[in-house]
Length: 374
Image (cartoon, rainbow, N blue to C red; front, side):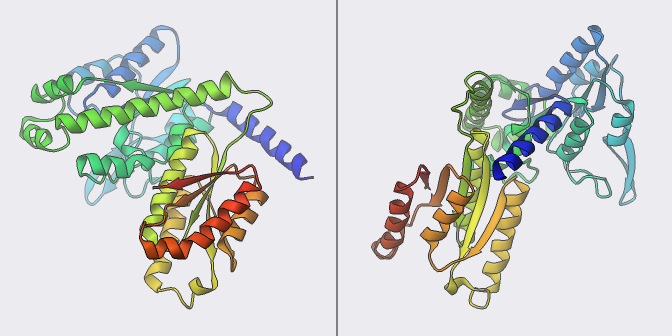
């Protein structure tokens, strides 16, 4: 019965996917590498070849070269929204769906919509358009990908607020990296081709330092390379022996550690195009009447975060954490269990050895892999 249900669900997923529009994303290491320019060039090529392509939303940032390329392309009028006494414009999702072009270009994938819009984020607008069977070409900078947030913050010192879930990147049929050397990008910045003159020095002193650009460039190249590897695995090497990966992130009430485990598991699952879950085992000492309110709030926030990133949260009450992990892993056909690495202090090692050994012994009896996240 369970196998029949899984087969039916899989077939339904195939039907839904066949109805979706195709999704192409241009990724860059930072602003100014030429993502929007390349999208517009592609739009002109499609138009010349008789494809019904329209501009849904383009942000030129006042760049002359980019603005020139908009000319001659059919544009879907934006939707006017009055916000705090000002008239602003947003992508008109319904107008795009009603016009139903073959292809629509939608810039700034990580953009947060103005309050009062149907969707909070533009990537949600894009999903709605894709579900209507319209192909979308979009663009995003590498620092806006959710699971890379901590790495980007470590590199640049900037906590990027506008982020998109990894599941959105995983939806893409094609990802193209727009690459420039650090020297070329800095030259473009100094020539005023990215920001206005009054912002150039600030940019050079912060985000556009050469060492920052190099590291962001590496992240972008790795992201696109990983996407290509996944496509090869799924479309070329896939056979009857293919194992669909399912990851289980095991967390406790330690908020920062839990967030780290969730983020890394989401990243790994994205790499393998696998499903992922978050398991919280509530032991008697972590009952609601025993755990501090601030820890409860942070735990709930981590559950919410995992759900937003495309994971599924499971909560169970058990006396034994290893037994609960194994029980859920077997029940859900998990292929890999992800746990946090204990802080290396003698006391913690002594206290956790028994629990860890029990988990290892249990996993040794199964075909489930274990990843210890640093």
